Length: 208
Image 1: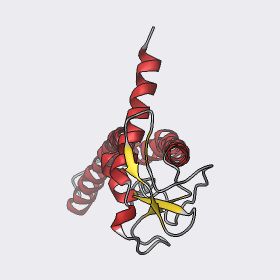
Image 2: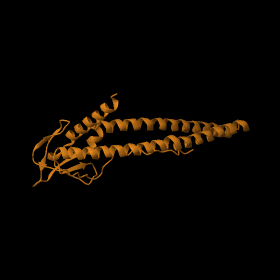
Image 3: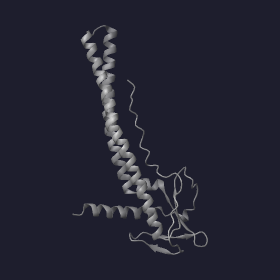
Image 4: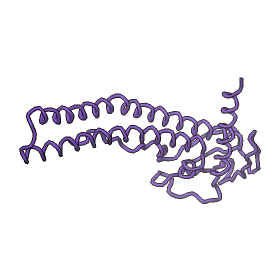
């Protein structure tokens, strides 16, 4: 039996390949402090144009919500993979025993049919796991990705507005922004800002 189920490795980690531009209301070459105490020095590239950028690769490793979501999804995927592997093993074991017995002419017809039933059951169980748990996992992964994208987008807009940034770019390997001077790097402050926001949400949801 060829393994039908070959779930693609969750690709939701690569969220933004291009750059995201956020417009804010103000902007001067001054330091501003947001509610969560993250302070950034806004750089001007001429006139009222102020820009900054964040590194998506670092967000994937340092944004707590991102990391925790990934761990949860990976745990669920591993559980499904283990179930499928068990069915694969059961099928192969029966198939090998059947082939060996047939070649040696040591199996009765009832024994042959029993091995065939065991193989068929393994195939059916594999298909069942794919159609239930596998599909549910894919849907959950898609929804988690949407939530994550929306969180980062909304936080980026809020962070830009609070710091007077006119252009806030997302930089990722292979993205449309191939180079930005590190002077405009606000990744650490942005991640700290998002983690602080998530902590507030956690406190609100856990409060009685």
